[in-house]
Length: 199
Image (cartoon, rainbow, N blue to C red; front, top):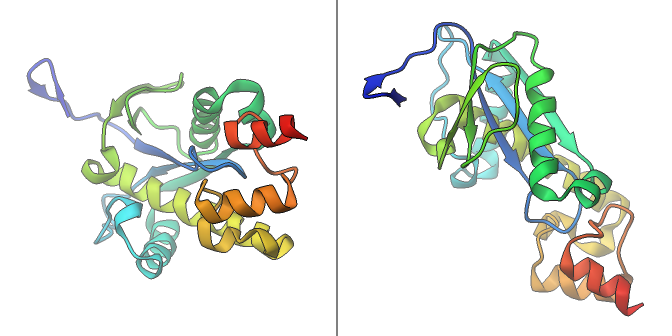
């Protein structure tokens, strides 16, 4: 990254942080923080959204094995409803960084704003395509949330969470109207709120 016209290279462990699940109507927002090991490079890191599920799963296993440190953070639907999705995401990012077994000296955060962290941090727009640590974090967060949605689907198969992953698709909206919200639905999100108000 460039700072004041000079290429800035942090000296010490650098974490990448990303989130998955800001848009869905149900479930946690999931964040991950990853510190890569320069001695154990991982080929093929990219924005998790641009990878097939099979490739993401393979890279997830490799990151878990080779990274110097990695950690997952969550904010629950209740926290999202209480704080709003932005503040809940920042809280989940703080939890992911706090969970790292190595304290980073610097953190690259995907997006346009940073949570308050004990280390210096920099927001990187489209960072999951530009910074390897953020790419790794995006893969860990995406695979984790997809697994959570599969578990929710197993508990409540009629909602189709294995297909739409909780996003407000036409199918999800129709099933939500048919069966009503679950405790895992985010009450503050308009489609869910309006349904509850109509009841």
